[in-house]
Structure formats: structure tokens, C-alpha cells
Length: 416
Image 1: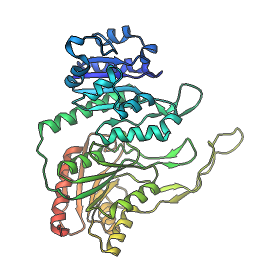
Image 2: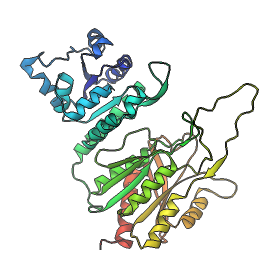
Image 3: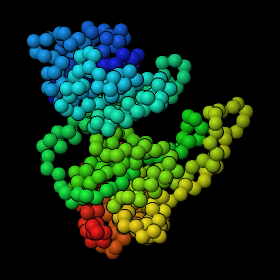
């Protein structure tokens, strides 16, 4: 695969040498384009030695091959790391002041940005607007990691680890290749609007810590991709995820269960299908500290009181039934067996309590489902149909769920 690796002018540029090595060891052909500022952190000689290719950031080099056009045309994938606030702004504005920004304007393949900057710069409204602009154009912008920054402070803004960027980049390229090889979408959900929640909610304890879960968001992303392929308009409510949502969705980002509830109830009003694939925390801390909770010598560990979060799935069903809505509501249940019953027994009872139309059930545990690429589920119906197993990759499971959704819509919620 031919990769263009753009390097922004931030101190995290030194980490990108490891990312370049991952690409070259996987036998990809990499052309590195550092910005002028980036070469003040890591020199051209390093990029040339690690890539095995000449390196330039000038549009006036290799003019005979029209380099600023050729590189974007030929690249199967463009990765920019670190993507500084300045570089994100220039890309969002469509500027073409150097070889990297002109190459981005000529890109024919997928583009991935891995941001790195100080927390306040990342959270600034201008940066967030630039990120949303890029995402709306189909560009993938990863969330920065949280942790120690250049100085003594910590927060979101660290460059994701090279292995994380590498995995996200290859997944993006594989998805683009699959879409190119299968350009004819199915139309079983054409004209339908589908809302999908995914990822794991985070319930704050203090400004640093939170209660969370192991959900990666992979199954939700696969569901969104399958819904788009089937012709649906997709609204995607993303809690914390290890991967980015697919291009083409209307993206709503949330963090806590209460934020997800508000987004889901708003979205359900004009949705034909609501799929609650997010792993929503059952409980949240009763009180959130304004300052970091510290351990103090001689004092006992703090006792954290929890309160129950609202049951979003059940509330969606109740609102639909009360207001005469016509949404097909699909729940997900991650279950473990215990002395009171096996996975399917617990799931069947949950389906009855929630009142949803379909419940997609999987057995979870250490090394199972969460974060994995494979899944095995059983689709239970609230309308009396026989349980339907589905297994394989998460894309395979998503396709099976969407086929079942389309069938249920036809039977119970036909287009008026």
C-alpha cells in the first residue's frame, strides 16, 4: 500500500518515527512529508533513513513530476501525525501553502488525522469546529489520548500511541478497499432513518477519574456501516470508543449516561429505528468532586456512593408507546450466566422487562466480545419469532442484525 505520512510541527513528532517503522515493517511504501516546523523537531535525514525515500516539504521539488498533485493522487492512504491545531485549521480551510496541504487537497483515498496539542488548544471552540468540518467531509480525526503533556500538566491532547494510529489507519484503508470492491449498496433500508448508540459511557468521579467499561465501540461502528450500506440515513451517538465512527453518519458525541439519554430521546423523535448498542453504565457516583480525590496518609479510602442511571432503552419504548410512535427499538444485552440462570434465560427476562422489538444478546467475559473483532450473538424477538443466532466478524453480525431490522420494519412498521 502507498502511504503518505504527514508530520506536523509538534513535539510529539518524535513518536511518529515509531509509526513510520510500523508501516515500513508491514511492507508498505511510505512517503514522508514533514511541515517546515516539523523538521525543527525531527530532521529530514531521520525520515529519509527510516522510509527509504527522499523527503521534501516544498512544492518546488520534483516539479517535473508535478509532485504536489501526484502524491495525493497515488496515495492509498494519507496519515497526518501529529496533527497540530494549526495544521487542522489549515486543512479545514483548504489552504495549500506547502507540500502537505496541497497533497491533502489532492487526496483520492482515505485520510486520517491523529491530533496532538495542549488540552486547552484541543478543547477550544475553533479547533473543535475545524475537527467537525473535517469529519463532515469524510476525513477521520482520531480523539487524542489523555495523560501527561509536554509540561507538568495532564489532560486530553497527547498523541495516540503509534500502535493505535497504525491499527486505525489500516482499518480505515481496509474499509475503503472493501467499499471500492463492493460499490453497489443494498437498499433494504432506503428512505429509513436509523439512530445507533455505541461505545461505553463514562461517569465522572472527579476531574481526572471516572467509572467506565470495556466497550470498544467496534460493534456499533459495524452496525452504522451496515445501515449506511443498506441505504439508511444514520445518526450515530458515540460515547467513548477505541475507533472512529464511519464517514457518512450524523455524529453526536456524548460522555455520560445522562448525556446519552438526552441525545437518544431527541434522536428517536424522527427515527424509524433506534439501536441501543452502547454499553451504558447502570450506576453513577451520587456526587462528583470538583477537585482530584487524593489519598491522604492516615485517612481511610473514600467511600463512593452510587445512584442508579435511568433505563434509556425502556424509556424509549415507553415514550413510543405513549405517544403513538412508529420506531423499531433494538436493544443490546451483554450477559453472563450465574446461579439464577444462563445467558439466554437472563436475556429473555430482560426482553420482557424492556418491551423492545429486538434484543441482541451476547455472552461477555475477559477476552470475549469487548474489544475483539469477532462476535457471536442471538437475536431475540419481542414479537414471538424464534431466536436467531449470528456469528463471525462484527461486520458479519452487523449485517445479520440489519437484515433482521429490515424484515421487522416491513412486517410491523411499513412505510406509510
